[in-house]
Amino acid sequence: MTGLAPFQYSHRVQFYETDLMGIVHHSNYLRVYEEARVAWAHARGILDYQQPNSAFQLAVVETRVQHLKPARFGDLLQIDLLAKLEGARIVFAYRMRCPERGQETLSLAKTVHAALDSTLKPMRPPPHLRETMRTELERYPWTETWLLNL
Amino acid sequence: MTGLAPFQYSHRVQFYETDLMGIVHHSNYLRVYEEARVAWAHARGILDYQQPNSAFQLAVVETRVQHLKPARFGDLLQIDLLAKLEGARIVFAYRMRCPERGQETLSLAKTVHAALDSTLKPMRPPPHLRETMRTELERYPWTETWLLNL
Amino acid sequence: MTGLAPFQYSHRVQFYETDLMGIVHHSNYLRVYEEARVAWAHARGILDYQQPNSAFQLAVVETRVQHLKPARFGDLLQIDLLAKLEGARIVFAYRMRCPERGQETLSLAKTVHAALDSTLKPMRPPPHLRETMRTELERYPWTETWLLNL
Amino acid sequence: MTGLAPFQYSHRVQFYETDLMGIVHHSNYLRVYEEARVAWAHARGILDYQQPNSAFQLAVVETRVQHLKPARFGDLLQIDLLAKLEGARIVFAYRMRCPERGQETLSLAKTVHAALDSTLKPMRPPPHLRETMRTELERYPWTETWLLNL
Image (cartoon, rainbow over all chains, first blue to last red; front, side):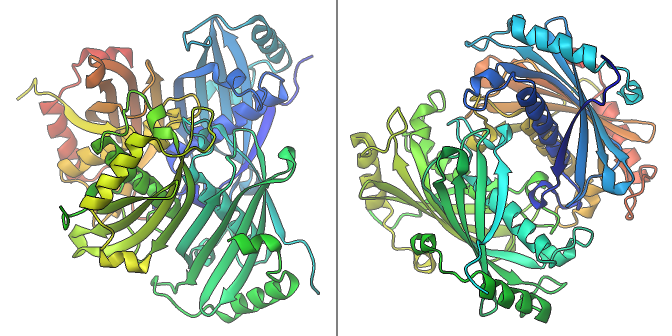
């Protein structure tokens, strides 16, 4: 089945996320995108909060963030997330929009991750993760037009 | 009218809020308490996100946090908040509990704030703020037993 | 030997430590005070960076921060730190001043800590820590007048 | 004159910069790179701490971070920074190494910035900034081999 809306996550901008320019500090975008990624992993059953080890076997290898418009204190941010497997890497793409400002796109991003074994050495993603990623891509193929700008 | 439950706010602990001890870093408790305070101010109509100036005329004068049990990644934190005016100061008391862990109390806190004018000089709280605080204390008097430990 | 200046630590305020009020966010004071505490522990030989366990066996039990004047982007902050043992608790007192602004005191603080064993249960501070604390108090007794305001 | 070592900045990893994986949280790399960028701007005379407006007229347009090895609590990080003008954009490249671990490269990064006028609209970089960037590139041309991996 294809054509469904991708995974979505919402985040209300907090006061402590702003800086003296009056906007969200650029480092905090990676934190909001991480929130979305964690919520996705939890929704897909590959992250158990009680066993956070299941989560942190995914190391961050690369991050890339584009800033189109500043996010501000009190903004409700809506993040669309897409995920896929590329070889041994897990790749996420994100779009951040603000519904209260006419669905304006504020930021686009991509993060790349590697599976790690319990000694923190890179490993091939385990079967259940590969299966989850395969299903994810089938249901939510990377056909969104905003991906072209990433 | 008295005896109502005080204002409540919920926060899901994020991965980036933890430290290498595997628990929420103590500085982040002040951020969660700020989230609760901002949500309260918004609910009471004294904070307009579009005019953050209305918010930041409340400077932080003092903070005090007690740590009883560590909060962990994925925990859903529930914060009870009480507010009152003490002279020219606005005082908040907070209790943080974890419903998923038998309503165990994780932390108690108190923050003290001063109203500032537009040049960041301390001023007497304006009438609408004093009125809000008066109503708040009438409806939610500081009779909770956990206040005794603060 | 008494009367020496207490332990000092310097911190330059970074851009990402500010908020939309244009000043250092109040939660970041606890981070700067932690920097001072870690530097002190390292200087006293009770913290080995290569074995961070030696550090995190000190849990934060209580924090208290007074804000007298705001710290701003680019400020060089100078922290005085005093440490002592109170029963099974380790207590630190801090004063933050700004040499570039006439040694104006910006903030005072106190943090209380408990020793934990390797299973994170509270324990009596081990002998070498008690010895370090005894020496510290002998050399730097809590006679500073600013302690009276804490 | 060419062939000089590029601008360098050092940062000691703090406890609050780690996460429950026991390593520096990936969002904090952008903060350390910002520290280096601000120190560079200050050293070049284009940032006056007393007039932070001079700093924040440089908006962050894009960030890109590669993570090769994790940074850990207590690590002394050494950042090399290169800067140049590309059209109306100011581009920085960074290498993070750890001298105490055999100068191992931990991370590489690139950030892209736009000059803003006082109403936060993009503008052509002002003459003194263009002049600074020209001199910078002459003295520190982008000939480092690590740039090839960025």
